[in-house]
Image (cartoon, rainbow, N blue to C red; front, top):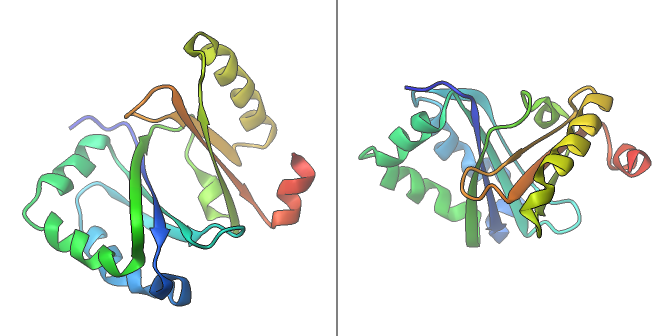
Length: 168
């Protein structure tokens, strides 16, 4: 199996139950944590400005490791354990970030989806994001989604919301 670390990001509409008690994801986390190629910990949270939007971040040794889990007979059971947390649609992305996503270890994580209107600017956008990533000592990481190279996900980690506002 190829071993390029890949981050799975699920952006989902949260259920009322999840907003009251995020620990309802524990059974799903317990199942996934036994998978070959998963890098612990698994991160989850809600958007501060809009708690009806939730995020799951799972770091894998490779995309192939995650695909193996999705192809396994137990995947249906895993999806069932996630249902109580989901209050509506979800979208899964896979990203190979420019560096290890240490931003996820911070108390506040910012997620930004950029859609390139003109793909000819990709190199310029990557250059700018690379400089920002370097200036923040990799507290901001980025990468195109494997599903659509014109969608770039940027993840920043901050000590507080106020620090994020100050930087930007």
